Length: 166
Figure 1: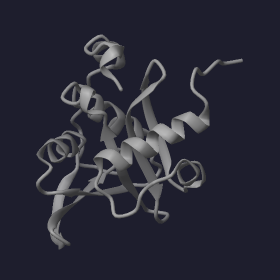
Figure 2: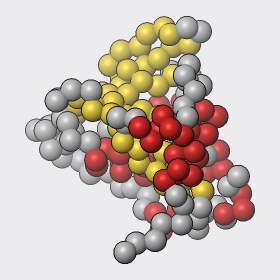
Figure 3: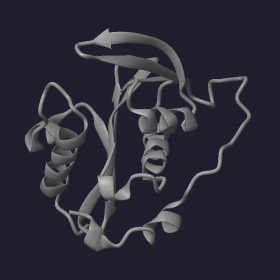
Figure 4: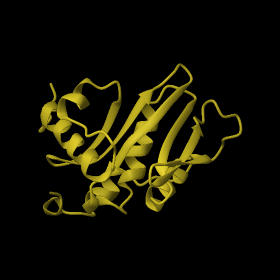
């Protein structure tokens, strides 16, 4: 038997709070909405705190969307976004994965590039522009042979003490 120090309800509550606080979405997420969503969430925790999250939603047999990727501000710039992004891509079972990111969000754009996404289009959405990014999973991409280095959990766990996460 495994012991997980945070209940599913608490994890969902923290996911909703993180997404609502830092993703500027038009619809606010709720604990119940997270728990009942078709989106599969990959969560990274430090102690009892959710420090990063990324969602994957299968939209068709061939395509999934990477969404709601956010890292707590105390943990940004430490490789956590790339870490959870890779884990989210690992659970994706479609050859094509897409995401939309505000073009003004350079850190997220850089993370998506590091994850192997390519910008294919840009469009206006309200008062901002969104980039559409697409990635073909390596196992389906006959031209992919590169393996990028990735910061592992033990590498970044010691970077920020628990007291900085609120």
